[in-house]
Length: 250
Length: 200
Image 1 (spheres, rainbow over the protein chains, first blue to last red):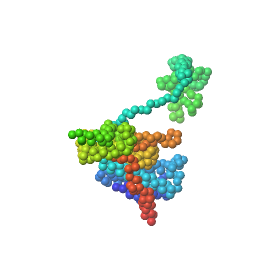
Image 2: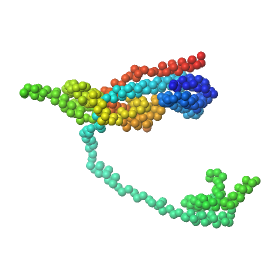
Image 3: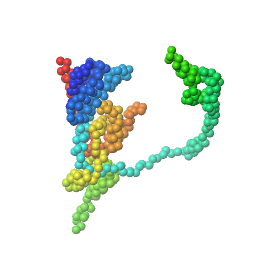
Image 4: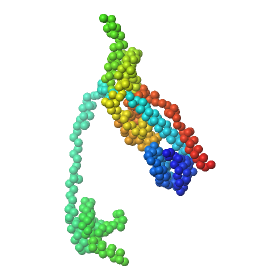
């Protein structure tokens, strides 16, 4: 089964795969219009007609379709300058032919190696790690004793004590804020988070926010924020429910 | 009774041949003529003559051990006569189960090395990572510096083991790529022939 002779019947193209490749490389056919999935389906159908799986053909097909997909992706995203896109159609075909030829030469070289491997099937020899050879002694440049001592002293200095001041942060308990927000909500149905935390330290604000999340988890409040960094509005959950009910019924 | 003894002792090349024989038995990889000269403390001419003597003694049909020039040096291998017995006794992990991908990658490294993984991938059209890793593990290829420029990719070349496994004296024994046939002209011709037939 020869992949290149695969007959295709696509919307934008009808003919052998080989020709499709040629036309695409010459830019006489816009790859963006080619349904690559259609090519795959055609190949799979041809494959299904056969009793034995032709691995060689499958491999070749995979490489070609992958190359096609890559070219298509590049043409769909023109800002991603492709190596081949810099070349004219003739040059691109030339380049591809050169690459194919190079690959074919390497395939043949691989076949030669494979044949050679078969020929040398009767060669048995001893294998092992390289024997231990005496290593040349590494000579150090002459050093001044005083300089070495000085360098050593510099290294031997006790490092400065690391400050642990930041470890002593005191966190106000989350429960404190939970209670505070609850009592606030018993008096008011809605409040702004920002106005409540006015004048607090960063740590306190963080804990207050944790308290909000806790209340939300319990289902006691609803949190609204129109957009990032907009004021955070907190409402009693029952209030929120009735509001949304009104909106929906309206 | 004394004559034959005196004859053997009087041939100093013979004693050098025995020394070389011993060195090659201990060695696990081929030894170059230079290495043999250094170890035996002898001149290249004499070492090569002694190697000739040794090769005559250790050849197919005469000895179970055969002297061969391989991978740029000299080494002993089993005679072909003993291959079947060897095969029953010993595995050959380096040669066994080399895949098509591995052979292609090996060919690229052998012909174009030192060569980097991206370069191999460009020629083969698929990533070469697992093939390269497998060949490294078998010891058939090794790292050989990096490509030019900052953060250049690691480059690979084949090892002496590669030459030994494939029975090559050196990489120059690989057939010339031109001899293997296949050229850009031919492929280009095929591509355009199909296109012209179609448009005609």
